[in-house]
Length: 108
Image (cartoon, rainbow, N blue to C red; front, side, top):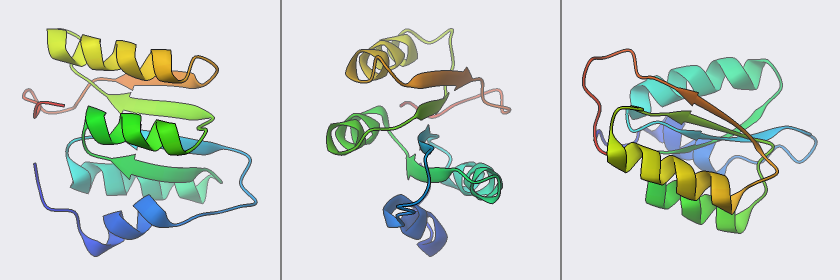
């Protein structure tokens, strides 16, 4: 997993109290996460980026998220377990699972 850039770190902690749509983005590739998050922020979403399932679960304990956007390999059993844990933690949130563009994915 890559080291978070200053931009990614600021997206993790930046709050937009007027946004009605806070979303959690779980993407192990933080460069890709920053790119997607900037597009979502431009559309009016408040985005919190997390790079692992464990950090995403911790974020869910701290805040409510309108949507969970998860980059996951649905053929990977560990990813399915992580998706289940995320869903159980936030049953009222929308969850979108997207597959990574690359053929390999770092473990969540």
